[in-house]
Structure formats: structure tokens, C-alpha cells
Image (tube, rainbow over all chains, first blue to last red):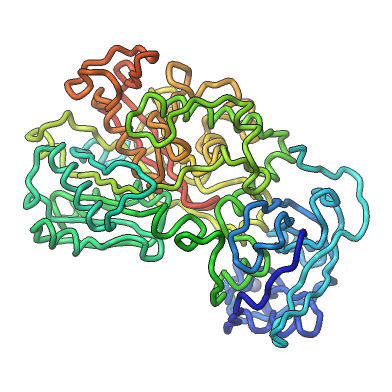
Length: 156
Length: 408
Ligand SMILES: [Zn+2]
């Protein structure tokens, strides 16, 4: 990431479905939705379970560890708060401890602290926290945390 | 075949020019496109009694405005939210509405100042980047990730496809080259300079894995179609183009949730293809040409897999040979498509397909309007030789697709 992200240029508005997630980030916990009836997990937040249709939905505290499933490198900025950050990497990250065997995986997306040359599909990552000028808003960044076999890197 | 196959027709098509500065309102452009479609069909405005359109978050005008301006008293008027895949979907809606008796003749239109009003990704006019905003709903997460535009979103799916199957940027370049070649045969196209694979590879990055030449144009344009029954079509000015079948916004989970599915590049069209070909009663080999939504080179490629033109994972080698270019095996997006003609969220491809099926592409041939074509590409002819069937595939996102099979 070339420069800072200007968090003061955006106002986050937690809602009924997401407020538990935002409260967890203030505790430095990365949570995903969990069905209180069948245990299914998912992200981003939704008010029902796509496996059993229950609306009794809670939160599952992940270990904040995963691996890169895919990524892009944003070169041309669109969001005003990211104009000085390009180029930066956004990744889809699989969280193995939140996967649902026989059903869906649980994959999230996040901006990475690492530049493109350090990033590859398959590498392990862990959550890292970014405070913003708004004390109610803490953003989870992720960063590469080790090495792995069989990684894949965009050759371009 | 479906119960309604060949019962309804597209009888009129019209549009404005594609430009980067229309200087007009969306209403002014829409009126021009609707009038052009009426003139094309040989119909009066008061013979239309239904009108529908699509828009993205209010970037357009409304059907009541157009009807008022043109003196139409409608029995059905609805404007829906949505971009790509909406044109084909509204054709399906029109069939249902006419069949059920809600209207007899329906105009489907789209008008957007896609360059001078709201740009792709919500970029403000004249701004280098989107203005600061309140981030709620889905945007509360996307604004954390710095990830929102189609280039950024679809790139995630493309990157995983490259990793899983060895698809390359160079292979995608063949789509850009083919569609650009078609644009060189189209007087209306906004990008007419031929390009090579090397030009594609050397163009700047927008969002890796996408180069600039993987990305569509942004233009100001309006487009209109007229749908009515085949009985009515026989009295009109153009050879009827029959609607054989289609799908209307077939979808799977929204993209941010689809990322948790087993295979993230299993896109919406995959779920619609059996319905599409089953309803139309044809097979892939019966198609003389296709259109396949090219917001990006990748969206064309992945939908060729999804709709079964090639095997899953084979999209890269499939397009790499140049088979999508006119006079090759599977001509695709003959107007130049979104990559080179301009951008209307898909509906312009229906217009091109209709003209090709009438054998009256509006190319550089002096007698094009009367259907006299040379088929000499070096002289700017883009009309195929006597095509009968076209399969069109629209794209709303990775997880939403509509489609439309037409025949003459
Ligand atoms: Zn459940």
C-alpha cells in the first residue's frame, strides 16, 4: 500500500444485521454469523441461515487466521478514501475454522497490509487491526503470516 | 420448445449515437431512441400500450416521462432497477405481459449518460474518485476493503479462474481484439482503431488481472426495442425476428456470498443454460452467431463456459484461437460490443443481433439500408452471410444472467 487510507472521508453505518460484527471488531475479534439452530456459519452478515432458514442468528468468534483464496490489485482508485493507497491488494480469504463441511466454505474479503510482491493465492494470513478517527469503528486488515506450498501468483 | 416459442417478435429497434458527451438529458436521448425504433418498425407512438425500462440507482429518466413526451397512453408502465442482464429479462417480461393481456405492444428502453452523469462504480462527474459518502448496507464492507467496482469485483473471480485452470491475460486479449475488429466495421462504434494482442498486453492496469483493454467503454446512449405478437408483426415494415426462448435474471448467491461457494467462477449462466436451450428447442451448433456480455473480456469468456460452448476451465484456450471473430467459427458481439462500440448495459447487443438476423447490419456498405452487402470486410461490411439463429447472453454480475435466443 503506497500511502494512507483516509478513513475520515467515509462514514460507516452499522445496521441491525451488522452491529454485532462492528462491536466485535472493537474487542479485536473477527466474527462471522452463526446459526444458533444448526451451527452453519457465513459472512457477510445476513439475517437468516441458508442451510436451515432459521432466523435465530448469532456470532462465531474465529481465530482470525486463514489463507488467500483469490485477490486483485487495485491500481485505479475509486473510493475517495483509497486514492493515496493505490496500488493495494484486496483478497478473498478462507477461514478454515469457520468452514461448513458438506456445505459452504466461509470466505471473507479484506484489504491486505502487504504489497503485491508479497502476496499469492494459498499463503496464510492473519487479522491485524486498524483504528480510525471514529472510536466506534475499528477496521480489520489482514497480513501475510507465513509461507505455504503450492502457492500461485498472478504472472502479469 | 417452449409453449411461446416464435409467438412474439422484436419488430423495431432504435438508438442514439454512443458518445462521451451527449449534451442531452436522459429523457431527450430516450425519446430519440424510442422514436427511431417506432420509425424502424413502421408504427405510430399511439400503437404502443406498454413500456418498461431498467436503470441503475436512478441514473435514467422514467417511462411516464417518455410516454408523456410522446403522447402515449399506456396500460403498462414499469421501470426496474438493474444494469446488465435487464434488457433480455424485460423482453421475457414483455412476452408474459402480452400473453396475459396486460398490453399488446411493448417498448423496452434504456437511457444513460454513462460518461457524463454517473460513471461505472458510482464515480462522480469530473472526479478522479468517488466522493466521501455514508457507507451502509453492502457498502459498509466494500468501503473497508476498497473494493466496489465491476473491475475490482469480477477480477477476484477471474484471478481464481487463472489459478485453477491456467487461463492467461493473453488469452483474454483475443476477445478484445475480435470485438475491436468488429467495431472497425461499425460506423457507430466509439473505438474504431484496430488493436493487437500486444496492444492489449501493453495497456495500463486498471485492477489486476485486468488491463485497460480488458474493460468496456463508458458512453452516453439510449436504446429501444419494440416487442409484439407475430400476427401484428406481419403488418409492419421489417422482417420479424422471432423470440425462441430465454432466461430472465437467473441467479445464485450475491457475489460476496458466492465467494464461499465451492467454485466461485461457477457463474449465473451455468444455472440457466438448460432452460435456455430447452425452451428454444435448439442446440449450440444451431447458432450462426452469438452475443456475450463484454463488460470485460473475462465476462465473455466465463459465460461461454457457463452456457456450455466449451468445457469448464477451457474458456481461455477456446477464445485464444480467434474463433469469436467474424468469418470464424463463433462470431461474437458483431457491433464491437461494450468493449468497443459503447456501453448500454447490454441492450445494444439485442439491437445488433436483430439487425444481423434481418440481414441489414448498418455497416459501411452503401446499400446496407436495403440489405445489399458485399461481405467484404476490407470495405467495412460486417453483415454475416444469411444468419438464421443468434444466442445472446447477458450478465448482471458473476451471479446473475439473462439470455435470449432469436431467429429470423
Ligand atoms: Zn441453520
